[in-house]
Amino acid sequence: MEIGIIGLPNSGKTTIFNALTGSDTATEAFSSGQVEVHTAVVAVPDPRVDALSALFNPKKTTYAQVTFNDIAGFGKGAAKAGLAGPLLNAIAANEALMLVVRAFEDENVPHPDDSVDPARDITVMEGELLLSDMAVIDRRLERLASMKNRGTPEERKVMAAEEELLQRLMAALEDETPLRDIELSEAERKSLGGFGLMSLKPLLIIINQGDDDDERAVAPLLDARTIALRGRLEAELAQMDPDEATEFLADFGIDEPGLHRAIRRSYAMLNQQSFFTVGEDEVRAWTVSRGATAPEAAGVIHSDLQKGFIRAEVISYGDLMDAGGMAEARKLGKLRLEGKGYVTDDGDIMSIRFNV
Ligand SMILES: Nc1nc2c(ncn2[C@@H]2O[C@H](COP(=O)(O)OP(=O)(O)OP(=O)(O)O)[C@@H](O)[C@H]2O)c(=O)[nH]1
Ligand SMILES: [Mg+2]
Image (cartoon, rainbow, N blue to C red; front, side):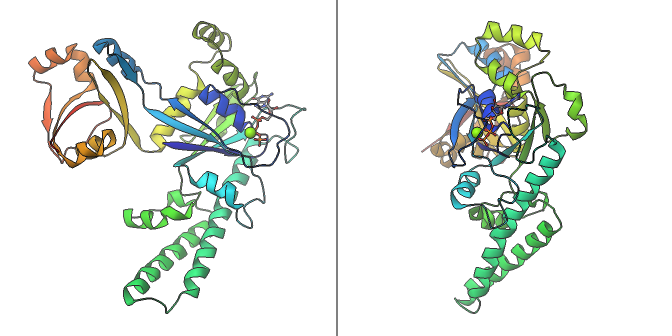
């Protein structure tokens, strides 16, 4: 799962990236304007994995992972002519976007619009995503028009369907509706895959507050897809050893590090869930789409497990913990044998039977 961090220049993208990933990438008040992507892979904190690890005492414990990409800033007007190639490519490579919006005041850090106004900046940036998509769709429609009357009847049918779909999307964009809010069939989604449409991607908004700011100051902006973080503070926190961090969290009245909240929201937003494999060798969390079947889940572990899937032995995390161990759970009849049609649940513990 890759999440691209975007936002206006100097909004604090690299600071938030450092906070989320525990990196120590240099931040600067004046950007070079070059497309340079910082990447870090982060383990998804999950108390269930900790508890399973305590229960099985494995040689290795592996958390689910998410990759954050800190992408160069782009601002108002950037999307008019279509975002420049390298920037568009850097953003298109992500499954979801994290928009960083500045709320911190600091005279030494210039704002491209000369004032701090997070509500305005959210509107500006969402507008840029829509404009960028319009430019992409416009170009594609022109190309389709130039190919009219060419190709086999079958090819023409495909092109006509694509044109109709793109016109529908264009109408939505003109109406200021992001494409993620449009209902699309699986096939339509697939046909759009190569275009790098930005407003199609799930979007999580991070409001970057100053060290002494209170979340209540931006309360009207907070919703299911918007959270507030004190970026610089959290970046400092991410550099501390655990004891120091605990004290620091208490001092600043932070319930839990922003990383945990941001990851949880990202997971929900991406329609993802976790299942676990357990044993003496390894306790491990895996990421699947919500609604994934048992064979699809098996395929995340290895394609052979999906191909040769016979059945899965499944127990819910809660049942296992209640029983206090696998042997006890088995005695209580809590382990289920599930076939190919089984739809996995968040927190399932699975053991796959397969045959290749
Ligand atoms: N006071 C304060 N300063 C911050 C905060 N977050 C970032 N800054 C400062 O703002 C400046 C820009 O931060 P960056 O994280 O580099 O911003 P950016 O969005 O990555 O900038 P570009 O990549 O250049 O577009 C740096 O000087 C940071 O130290 C914050 O929460 N409070
Ligand atoms: Mg930066």
